[in-house]
Length: 172
Image (cartoon, rainbow, N blue to C red):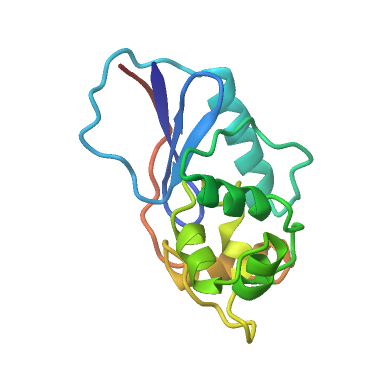
């Protein structure tokens, strides 16, 4: 069984998907056409994920990581695991990330970063171009800039996005 929740953020709603024990996806693209079964108030993993997001969007560095499960190829998993090692408030280039994991191709790393299934919590937004430029973010450069400004304590206005309401649904 899977559960999903829509969580409102300053950047627009995000969809969280959990398998009951781990968070498996967090996306700015709300999932549509899901088979809705029983609506429930909460499950622990979604509560932990929302708590993490509450702290993060309040401008505070969360001191815990909700349990996550990164599903992808072995190469993608290596890249996604390396994202977790990028400190809060810091950035790394695609080339440096590639070197860190022993890969010769920054482009291959960039493609894997772009397929990160758990945005924000697994900080793909902290990866920048070789000259420090805001390159490639699946959810838009404006969102990437906002997230980095939030972490650096630099005031930034969120891009204009509609806000969603929190809903949790079990999926079979």
